[in-house]
Length: 266
Image (tube, rainbow, N blue to C red; front, side, top):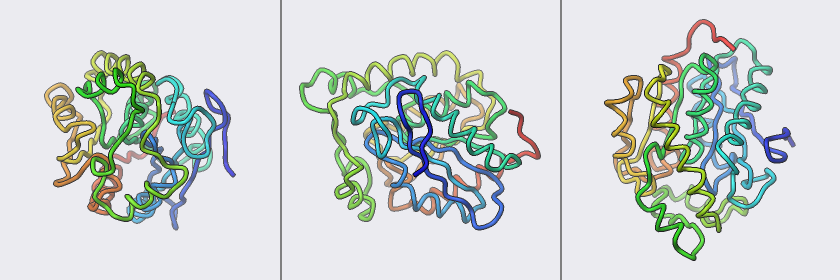
């Protein structure tokens, strides 16, 4: 199975190649409780738009090493994204790269792009916590494990069944304090560095997202001219695996294709 040596142990990754030479490749970082295998539909749908997918299992998730649910630091997430980026670039040196992430993974995607100007043609985030989450401190103060409710994640029955029955997926872990320590400096960096970014950024977001509320993303529209927000009606948090998943993937595929240049610097 494919692994690389990550910032805090071995990291498992997947590559879904396109049937023909792709027009672009997307480096993808999943969110809390997930793993890369949950995005097989997303990979197939992107492939129909000429985009192949490279996705890793975050530390503490899926087949990667680490404490259950704990990705470590943002620096570790970004380091692993960079290694996966370099693997994809070595596989097809002439194919432009975009980077994306869902929920917690979206922060890693944005920071990876900020750290390597010119490496990625665009950024795609979904369910992105780009602003402080009002419920997080209450979760930290509680003695209960951090937990996400299926109704807050998706209405798609196929995906809900995966979450409920896949032994590698989970919706709860005793890491509320770790999440708070990760998110607080991340929001500080976003506030400091993101407004100066010039890379095209697509934020796909469910209108009914109760985990990372939509207004935390739309609040950035006046500060970030390169930001485009695509709102999915009736969508919850896991919008890439929502009922409208095919439509969402099509929007993302077109966005990536629209920002493919003739060459990408390294």
